[in-house]
Length: 338
Ligand SMILES: [Zn+2]
Image 1 (cartoon, protein in one colour):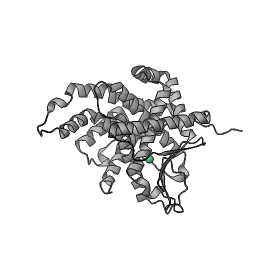
Image 2 (cartoon, protein in one colour):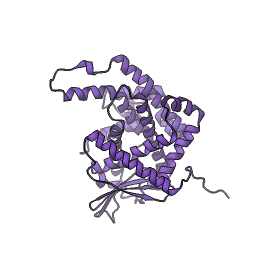
Image 3 (cartoon, helix red, strand yellow):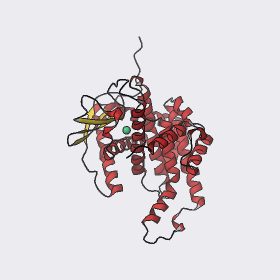
Image 4 (cartoon, helix red, strand yellow):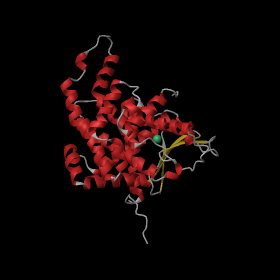
C-alpha cells in the first residue's frame, strides 16, 4: 500500500514559522531601504500548519494579512537542500556564489513576501479570480495558490488573464525591490538573488499544477523567469538612465553607462549563468515542462533580444513557450488600467 510521498520534508512547525516571520521582517526592511519609507501598513502574518505550498494576501477591514502555510517554508528549504546535494549544482552555483541552502531558502521566502506585499500595494484584491462570492464584501484576497474551489462559470478566461497579469506586475515590483539597483561590485550577490526568485517561481508552478482542480492561477514559471532575466540583462543600462533622468542638467552623460565590455561581461558572467541556474533547478525539481518551456539558451536569449528590439513582438515571432506567454500578457496588459 503506497502512501503519497510528499516532496517536502516536514520541519518542526515552529522552525517554519520562524523562517516565515524572519522573511517578512527582511522583506519589510528591504522595502524601507529601497523606498526610503516604511511599508504603509504592518502586515499581520498568519501561519497555517499545512504541508502544501500556498500563500494568500488579504485585506480584512483595516488589516492587511499574509496567510501562508508551514509547507511553504518546508518546500522551499527542501528544494534548496536538494539543489546543494546535487554535485553539479554545488560546483557551478555553490562554489561561484559561496551561498548555502539556508541562505537561499531565506531569500526565496523574502521574495515571496515582497510579492504578496506588492499585491497589497497595487490593490489587486478586486481580481476576479481572487474573489470568494460569499465573502467578497468583507474579505478580499489574492492567493499564491488559490485555495477556494471556483465554479467554472465564475472563472472566465478573461478573469484568468487579468489574474495572470496581476501576478506579472507583483513579480516585477517584488523583483525590482529585491534586486535593487545595479552595482558593478555586487554581481555574485545578484546571481544568488535571481536564483532564489527562479526557485520560488518553480515551486509555485509545481503547486499550481498539482492543483489542477482549481485551474491555473499563475503564469508559467518560464514566463516569469523570462521577465526576470529580461530585467536583469537591462539592469546596468537602467541604472544609468535613472541617474540621467534625476540629473539636474538635461545633457546626456554617457560616462554613467557601463562600457560595452562591462555589459558584455555582465551578460556572460551573470545573466547566462543565471539562465543555467534556472535550468539546473528545474532539473533538480524534475520539472521537465519548465525545462521545455524555457527552451535552449540560444532560443531563450534570441527571444530576450527580440523583445528588447521590438517591445510589441508578436508571440509567433518568438521561439520559446515562456516568451510567447509573456508577449501575450504584455499585449493584454496595455488594455488593462492599473
Ligand atoms: Zn501573487
